[in-house]
Amino acid sequence: MTRAPEKMRGATDLANKFNPRYQGESVSAQTAHKWLTGRSIPTIDKLETLADWLKVDLHWLHYGPPPSGTSQSTPKPLGRDEHYPASEETLELVSKIEALAPHHRYLLEELVEQFYGVAKR
Image (cartoon, rainbow, N blue to C red; front, side, top):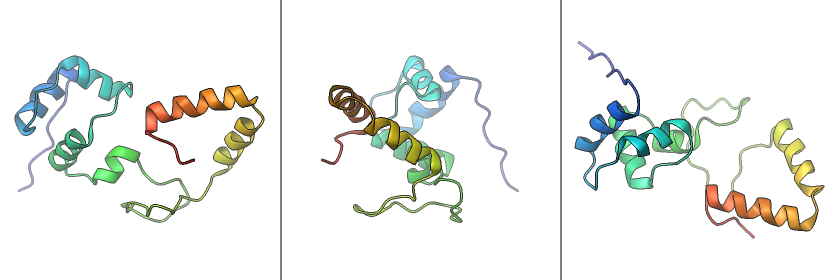
C-alpha cells in the first residue's frame, strides 16, 4: 500500500519536517519561507536532502522542467557547453538586453550573477 504524501501547512511545517532529515545546521521557518516564496534558493546540500525526501530529481528541483516543446519527462543535466533551445520569450529578452546601454547591461549581468553564480564570459 502506498503511503499518502505528507501535508505541508506552510514554512514552519516545512522547516520542522526538513530539519530531522538534514544532517547540517537546522533551518528556520524564515529560511523555509524564503525558499517557498522564491526569495532564496537552498544550498546544494539542502537541495539534495529535499530531492531525496520528496523523491524528485535534483536537477528538476533546482532548475525546474525543461522549456516547453521538449519531450523529456525527467530532464537530464546538460553538459558544460550544452543549452536548452531558446524559446521566443528568451530571444525577445536577449534582444531587449542587447538594446540596453553598456552600463545597464553590466548591472543586469551583476544581478544575474547574484542569482545564478558566476556568468560565463
